[in-house]
Length: 106
Image (tube, rainbow, N blue to C red; front, side, top):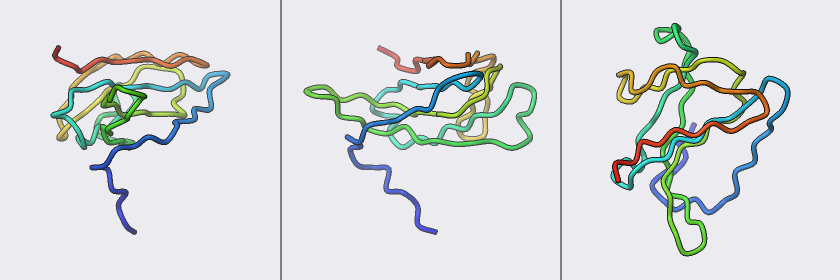
């Protein structure tokens, strides 16, 4: 299985299927975190199954943002990990909504 080339601009639209108890998460990041793999799991289940996304370069008109997008998350509390270390805990996902987390330093 070939890995997706993440170190390139990703101008493609992101489509999120939200509703009921299903929400999404966007993690905003600095350019130096480009291609960082972020893992997510239910809070309290850090040693279990995790999903992952990379921070991607996302051109938006004249601006560029760096973000990871997690869709299809059931409402509840989540933990974010980077390099197998907990980076953020108790991220609350609401159904039919998009939660944002900002890891930018500026």
